Image (cartoon, rainbow, N blue to C red; front, side, top):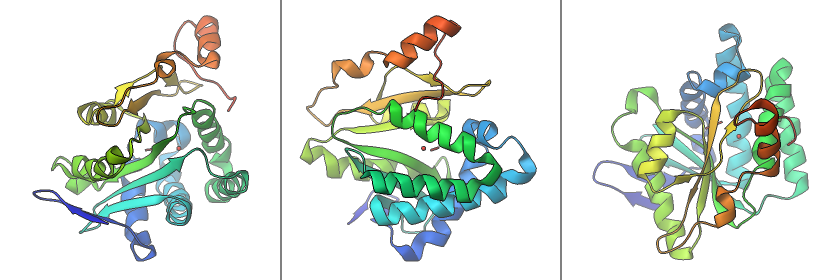
Length: 234
């Protein structure tokens, strides 16, 4: 499906787009606060990021829905939830281990934390979204995500995302997402905003604004929002 705003044409990606989209995601990820936590060694970050997003793009083209722009300058990876089958999840974890090597424990911890705090209601999950650095600030991200919202709103489907930076959070707020209880990654990691967008005319489930039991326990223990290893970067 293809949609066009005043300046941006959005279409579904194909395997032929994989190489370009790996680069878009990896380069955008390099300066994300979560990247500082996942791969603190800057000498390793670009290499590991490209390996990781090679796995991510391959997996999402097979099991998810990937949108891009006519010039390939942006990518949004969506998954219809409930969650994929356990076999897909197991395969994904194997792929993450192989792609990230010595950094795999933190990558897997992050994915497990995200999964353990995932809303149970049916929705579309925005797992990753990125715009090439040289194309940012032009409304590309807004057009990219709005295109998918226009597809799921008539179906009565909400959307969910974890915002990994204040800039991303503010974009999602402008697009109608509301924040629920946040997480903070352990060992001095950044804050993650869990955000939910109800379809037009829909409502946000009240329990989304109730802290996950694990978040409550760790608030009491640490004196603030924190999520630990009980169990995706954007």
